[in-house]
Every structure is written in structure tokens, then in C-alpha cells.
Amino acid sequence: MIQRNAIKSWTLLPDVEVILLGEETGLAEAAKELGVKHIPHVERNPNGVPLISSMFKLARENSNSELLCIINADMVLMPDFVEAAKQVKGLRLEFVLLSQRWDLDVATSIDFSGDWSRGLRSMVNGQGQLHRPAGSDFFLFPKSCYEDIPNFSIGRAGWDNWMIYKARKENWAVIDCTPSVMIVHQNHDYAHLPGGKPHYEHPETNENIRLAGGQANVRYTILDSTHQLQEDGRLARPKMTSLRLTRTFELILRTLFFFLPENMIENIARPKRWKKRIKKIFR
Image (cartoon, rainbow, N blue to C red; front, top):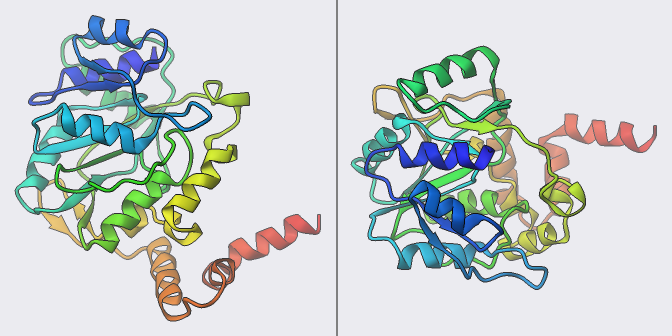
């Protein structure tokens, strides 16, 4: 139900082509029912988990669009998403667009008749919660970007953080559109993963971190964005909050003291987190 809600919302967007990647049970039938393109035969790791690199390659080969977007199949999009993409495309040549999500409990199929997005916005404003700026559920970028993706496993931690690190490393604009776009995440458990464990508790997460170049490269979050897309379509520098200040301090320390262990830098930059760990150890 969650996946159908998400994919249906994508099909209602203007100027968008939807591609479902994979060969999981029922996927081909769902694609046909929803009228979207389906591409099977995604390369997988030895444990059978699909690889991000293969997904990107297949999308490039089967789309003529100037912009590509990888998005999790639990995310509901509304027309403001397309407007943001068009605005950013005219402002920057190389960029990645991302945002915080709004978490919402959805117990039934969404009624997409009438002005459905207005009703959903009202529900989110009354019952939803803005997710903290960690983890990203979509990345939208020009086709010329991200041409060299490591063999990350999807559905495991680390690869999304690397996407932000890569953009910062290449001096692309990392644009947070949270102020201008509402992205809705339908809450769920982890029953779809082996053992029902969260994504960060699986061996492929450790491999993702290795492929990313180490822990420092998977600490990048939306706090590391270089710009924000405002409601009026302008790009502005993000406001300096305590969280952004702490993150900026950490990046400066990592640059100056690159020879120190990563955990030592984190303990200096984030003493409160370090103290919590100490308390946990001695309980």
C-alpha cells in the first residue's frame, strides 16, 4: 500500500517519467498497473542486495531526461517537487537537490481524486513530524553528475551520506529544498529487511562505509548543504544554527588534524555525544 501510494503520486506529476528498477515479486505487475516503465536485472551483491551503481547505469541508459532522481518507494511527492527541480535547473549547472522529509503515519490508500495534495498537506501539518536533518530519501541531479558511483548496496546505511560528500568534494551546489517543498515519508517498520533489523545493522552497511572511503565520508548530512531553496525560488545560504555550527567546527577540525583518528575528532567536536557514550558504558 505504501509503495502504491508513493508511485501513484509520482505518476501525477507533470513532465516526469517513472522507472521502477528490480525484479522483486509483484513489481512487474505493479508497474504495468500503474503505467510506468519497469527495468529488471539490476546487478546485486553476493547476498542478493541490489547495487546503486547498477541502478544509476540502467536509469541513464533508459532515460533521455536532463535530470535524474533516485527516490525511495515510500515517499509521496507533490507538484512543488517539480517546480523546485525546474527552478534549480535554471540556477546551477552542477548540483544535487535534497531535503528533510515529513514523517506521517498512513494507514490507508491515499485518495488521489480532486485537490488531494491540499488534503495531504493539511494532514501533515496536523499529524506529521519533520525528520531530523540526517539521512536523505531522494537525490535529484543533472545527468552529468554522479557518473562514477561505487557498488553500494541499496537499503543499507552510508551511500546516501556519500552522495552529499561527493557533491561537496566536487564543489557542486548541495541544495536543501526543505523551506520550499514538502516531501512526505510514510512511516513503516523494517520487516522487509533480513531479520527485521534496521538498515545500519547489516553487514552491507560496513561494506558501504568502506566503499565510501571511511567513516568521515559517511557523516555528511543535510546540515552540509551549501544552499537552501526558498519559497520565492531564490537560492540562499543556510542559516547558521547550533547544529550547523557544530558540524562546521567538526569539518574544520578534520581538515586541520587529518592525521588524528576519526573518533577523536568527533569526541572533540561533539563532547555531549561523547559524554553520553561514557555514561552508557558505565551503567
